[in-house]
Image (tube, rainbow, N blue to C red):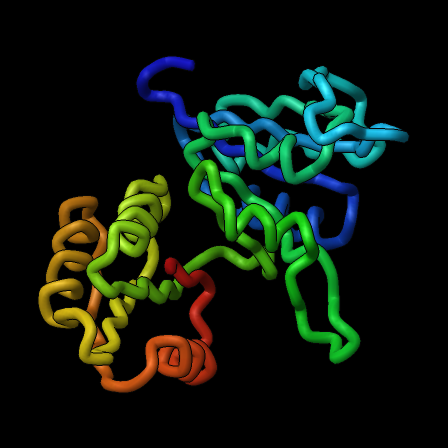
Length: 223
């Protein structure tokens, strides 16, 4: 991989969620990025350290290279390995894209086991995609932590980030300086040419983040 070329990995199990994740990719421009679409299949009796390697294959649910995505290439790969290991081991990915995994009995999207595991044990920046629509409204949550800063930096360097409207949300819960953290986030975004506004609230972070999501319906949340 050249210095200017970045790697996008898409987890693909052939499901409707995977279809949506791939359409989301195709609805954004990715100049100087290449994509690997990986399908992992569990071996019949898989030990945790089952040796496996990625191989190219003719997928029954092929993901085509779409001109508008501007991807340099799309490689379709499969591996006989636990899905969590197959996707979670790719620390060379600049972004890993997955679907939520399943629909709960309430018909609300909830996380499948693989997606849940990847979020809790990420080896690379991970985006959980629930809609194929182009990203226009973004909520960037910040508390001054390294994790929040990394998430914002990752988003800011996506090739289409400047086409979005970003709201920086900092929640004053008495444990951090919301003004300082929001100014830091704004500087990161501004340095990448991304325009943003800031909202500072008081309360419990989880509750305030969910309230903002309900009120403003962002297309993407960084956290």
